[in-house]
Length: 326
Image 1 (cartoon, rainbow, N blue to C red):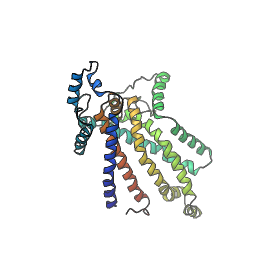
Image 2 (cartoon, rainbow, N blue to C red):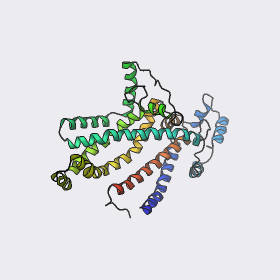
Image 3 (tube, helix red, strand yellow):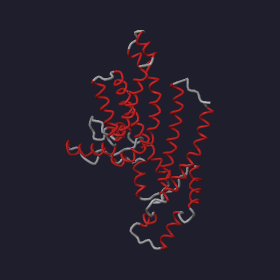
């Protein structure tokens, strides 16, 4: 297993280098002028353009810029923002934990919703509860995250006179853990969970719910499960002890593949709920053509995807000892 993990980490290096090349050079061909963004309302004369480009390091050939940036990334120095010249690492230390917390809570909420509903739906196949569960799953898949988040804020304001924008002020977890969790789950100060983590969790739960039901149905038809029924074992022991573990193997794959969806969803949800994470920062940086910030966030996202896939593969071996890596 150690050898396998080591090989996978080595193979991740060319993948991440390829991602860095794509991100770096594709940003350079996007429409827009970072010099004009930095100059603001001032007229960009040739002299001013040359001065700004020299100050930002944009007067060098693109390949030279890339290698200088990559050299910094290797030492975990992502450089400075083109817009305000602040160190990107300082802002990452503040914004990254916020997004990780929101995404982690969303993943937990999605599993709390999806796994029980998917299992019950499979056990009670073609019953009324199965039809309701399948409808809920399809609804979660069909409703876009940005629409759900917008509707929650708009209708809570118009129908229930809840204040909008959000009545609570965002507090970082280390400053006030309880206020932070309330904002992520109960931002309107009542018992109805409508926070950003809940919206993301609902969006993620549809896929896991459907797959859990499908896999449970397949496992429940296996001979060893029929044998367990014939032996008169309790239903809970059959489901938890015999069926669930095998049914969860493909579900783990899907959970690992949810990481890019979480990152994409956080861009929208953080902007709507005014959560100061990397999603909101990424969106603002794209508008401002702040290339260095966008590069840093895109590369970190790629690292998260690679590591999550590795974690999924390792989890396979735990769930099914028949799987061997060599």
